[in-house]
Amino acid sequence: MHLLHANAPDNSKIAFVIANPNWNERAVSLSELCENVSSLKGTQNVFMSQQSFWGWRRISQLNNLGACYVDIDYHTNKKWSRISPEVMTSIMVEYIDQESLPRPSYIVSTGRGLLIVWLLCKTSR
Image 1: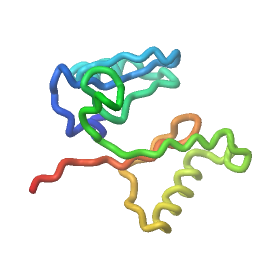
Image 2: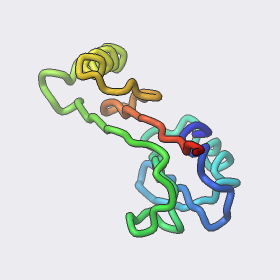
Image 3: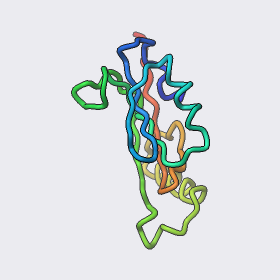
Image 4: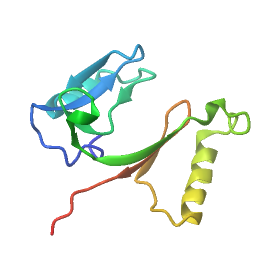
């Protein structure tokens, strides 16, 4: 979470969206983010936005593109559904390397597949 939103300004108008298992979304500020995420520890099927927004989670209100990601829900594919997240991670990293793509910043098992994340950072000129 700290890596993902490291470049976001600590501004009460900037929102990060968290959704619980019933998909009840709430927008919280950066200063509230840690506390809100911590309160969901141990909860399954929690979503946190990969980007920050000016208010609600709408493309028209996008504040900062902090990461590019691929969400691979392979659990419904008969060929791949029984493969462990660890093995699928190895397969994905091997594919990324074969295609000469940048290595991802991190990969997370989502319970339904993998979230492959490339963090974007501001560069100074």
